[in-house]
Amino acid sequence: MNTVVATALPSTLRIGLSRTSLEVKQFFRERDQLVFTFFFPIIFLGIFSAVFGGTTDFADGVDAATYFTPGMLASGIFLTSFQSLAVTIAMERDEDLLKRLRGTPMSPQAYFIGKIGLVLVTSVLQFTLLLAVAGLALGVDLPTEPAKWLNFLWIFVLGTASGSVLGIAFSVVPRSGKAASAVITPVVLLLQFISGVYFVYSSLPAWMQTVAEIFPLKWLAQGMRSVFLPDGFEANEPGGSWQLGTGAIVLSLWLVVGLVVAQRVFRWTRRDAG
Image (cartoon, rainbow, N blue to C red; front, side, top):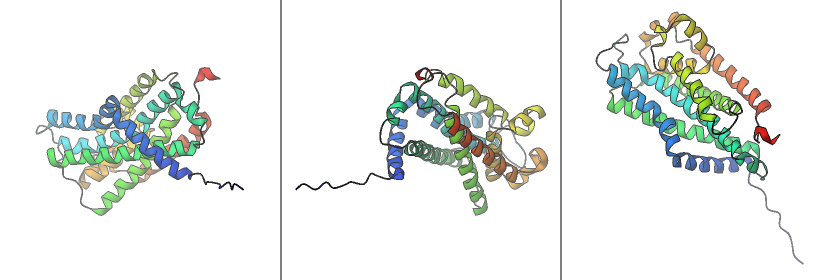
């Protein structure tokens, strides 16, 4: 008499981690996406340092490389979370990959674990490389106080989490995969320009600062400045403070908003699929 032995299915977490490994491999095979998303902040940091190096003192002995490093870190986190997820998920939906995955035993939770795992892996690699370039090639003094690195940790986690869920939610906006980059990239560039990534934030017009305060990238960039710029530079910020408490609240609110919106609007199929 034959005995049927039931085999337990892998857990959602295990499948999600396997999906993360696959996502990372696919990411590094896409050279165009790798250069724009992964190396874009590093390239721009080098350009800004070369253009302004030795000619501009932003206050308290802060040079161009030191000032723009926090902004490029924030920009990198936003690129690897919001932009990368919004574009790739829109393309996967357009190619019916999401529809096919939805028909497999893999749970939606495992799929999203894979995407968030990709963001975490690429973000960590990106900021590690950027800090290595900033410290070794551009002479940026990295913080040594444990308290600053603790601040970096929670700012990184909140920024990555909010950017990821917002990217998942925003992936429904492009009407097709081909239009994804054209729709999403201008939004990211606009936020970079008004959030203190490419300009000294305090030098921006007051109305532009007010608009930027609504969005998470401004608070992510300001939080990073609190970590990598001297304590005395705080006086040069609008309001004379790093406003870390406010930044934590705004990033948390965007995280909650992103989660709610993503759950309500996310689609596994194309619009023309009904």
